[in-house]
Amino acid sequence: MAHCNTVFAQILKFVPRHEFEQLAKEHHCGRSFRKTSRWSQFVAMTMAQLSGRFSLRDIVENMLAQSHRLYHLGCVSPSRTTLARINEDKPYQLYQALFGKLLGRCLNQPRQHQFRFRNPLYALDSTTIDLCLSLFPWAEFRSTKGAVKLHVGFNQAGHLPEFNCITDGKTHDVVVGRKIHFPKGSIVAIDRAYTDYAWYNELNDKGIYFVSRQKSNASYRVIERKEVNKKQGITSDQRIEFTGFYAQQHYTGPMRRIGYRDPETGKHYVFITNHTKLSAKTIADIYKSRWQIELFFKCIKQNLKIKSFVGTSKNAVLTQIWIALCTYLIVTYLKFIHGLTRSVQQIIRLLQINLFDKRELVPLLRGEPPDRHHIDHRQVSLL
Image (cartoon, rainbow, N blue to C red; front, side):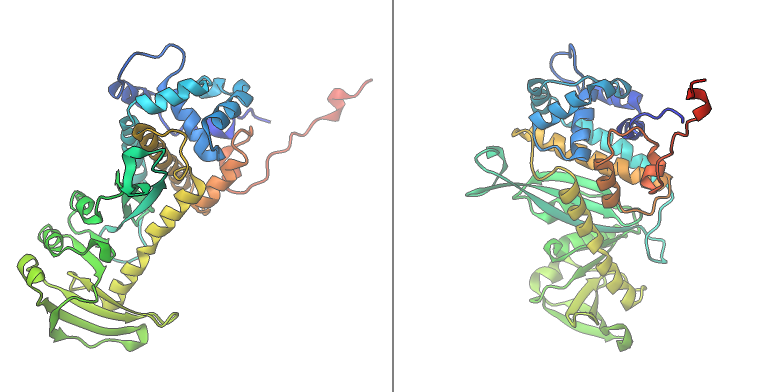
């Protein structure tokens, strides 16, 4: 049987060590390390993400238990105090830059979304990560609650969190949405929290299409009505013009209003978009596909460690979130290059219970049984 490194060692090979060390030099501050390194921090925190560790003591003790296997990882087991100090003091921007490197590798892989059109398709949304205000006073959200927000521009082709921003809990979604530069010709699915007619106008002027839900109190008049196929659930397809004072002042582009009734739930939805060529059913399906970003948030919150933190400083929290996002990209890249049919969630759960096993990574992820070491009994027989 061929020798195999641990599953964890094979995963870390997808992070080029020379690129990591170059980024570590660029984002270093303070004194140099004597025994540990940023690579040791990354290995320890990534292991915590994949194995479900909950505290610094838990991380360190788990690494000490696997100390005889750390040689192949190129790291040392840091002490609890050292790991806490690095998380608190050393800039989290290293892992933000590493995320960009890993994202570039994922974007270079063949990907496509579920629709026939070739426009890049994105979903834009945010999720709130609750924090205890007494432990995280810098993250004040409400009078008795702390929080940070993770804003994500989710590329539907490959399910990649392409645009990311972490802010305090008070930051409005539209403020971050304005800062994201989507490629020209993109279609962006957003919910009603992003309703801002001035921003809609900016997107339209840049050649970017949006699909959103209309607010119930929006004032408008119908300019043109189109025939619809009610068998597809479409109740209306109209070209409209806003009559509200603010909307008229800030939005000058075309606007289309589409009514859709979900055949399963019977609930009626009203969508607005500046795309005039796609069918009404496709517009409804585009907004429905926005649910993929909710599944992404559910995946990282349930399977990676971004809800409980091993440090209380802002730098420690951002370090842990960015390492979690890097871990998600590593797993996604594995899925791309090996053509795996398992979901990212299934792969993470599989890795959790096999992280330090010595077996081939790809057969493990494909669900193939491990190779058996067949012994020739003639070699051990006593003659």
